[in-house]
Length: 166
Picture (tube, rainbow, N blue to C red):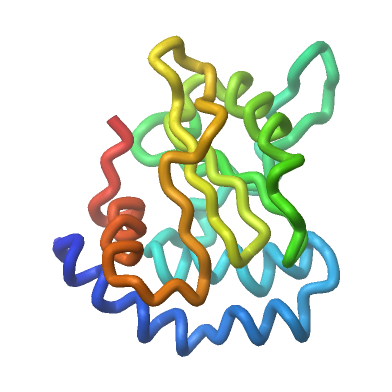
């Protein structure tokens, strides 16, 4: 199993190879394109998940409203998702979408981490002690183009090989 430092060292090269900023500007005009060209490659090529790990359109109904779905759910070792991911289109301001992620988080009761992203900015949220309530503020934010090694080291904690959501 690779160490957090080994994983972090690989991120800069992988991000450069994926060319996510350029792809975002040139190819991502809506949320589906953002998911396909930016978000799925981020989780598969960078964080080591497979397409099978990313459970799309996971049911997260709330307030009696049927048909509410979070964009992706990741089940690590349990039958229920422990990570949920809400996606917005490339460049979208994420501030106004925190409540939506929080609602999904509340209704996926085993979730420990919620990720809100526009394909370039990734905001990681955790549950409060009164689970399944999500903190209002992210505990970690990563932005593509950030070449600070400490950010890579923090991001490496969410790689499939070493993640611990407990």
